[in-house]
Length: 402
Image (cartoon, rainbow, N blue to C red; front, side, top):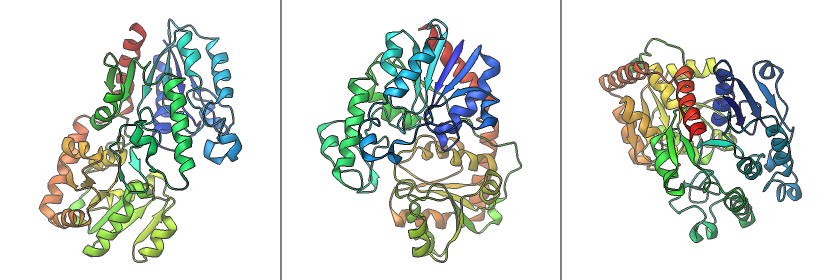
């Protein structure tokens, strides 16, 4: 079995990239060969020493001049040509293409030739880019989840992105290329989802014969003793500081309720939030070790996201550390709460609901129970890379034999 992995970046800059690159390295001992095809930036030498990888050295589409992004950002001809040349060295009989991300530069321009040649492939739905033109089913103007069907008349006509309507028009045009030229998701026979909500949202866009495989993302946490969260008096938010994450709501709740809170992360709202909440402790971006230290110091993790999410890894990491959570009921994070029984869910976007759940977390016995539940249930079946690779290989075998 030979594997080609497609992802926009040759560096880890988010959840999809992390899973794509780390799983590629982990796959090397289990298959005949692994090659990672990327399009943005340069390959770090330390990664090139671990796995076969190539890049086109391009830029993210949103960083290109308008004239270039309006054309190349819709359909990357250079990526299509390079991928076609890569496929020349492979046999469709024993090669599988695994697509992780394509929206920032790669586009799905390489798919028609891949299908024409008879190569089997599978896509992981890290987001909702196969169904929604802006990939998140999130209305930036209303700051709430979108329930419109992707590419319906209502979707196309709705101004759901910030800025001029031409921005939404560009997203629609690119999605149309994906649907009508790359023929995805129509030609998709196998889809990997990372959670149950992920599957429920995506299923209506697949043909009935398509097979959906649940392969949760691996969690990078080493076995560790339970955090004694009941001894802490501080809530923590960890993540991107942007509107769809609901961080502003979390800070309003903490301020109104008189709760201590620490914020880890950076993003477009950072300056605005620091000015609006001068008494909040902003840690900025932290490395993995520092982030874990802050997480373990928390009474509870706040995850107030306003959109569906895919599989919020930080909520699983909280369970692994024995840290309770408070999550919005609209996001996929609620699945983790249902599985681990390590927290509470509040009504998405509702300030009073969030404050009430934070007050419930002032009960030491409740916090201790949530902490023990999460720690025990997570380590009974940890989401290790070995578990992830085992599931991936089973999917790969099924796709190749289809």
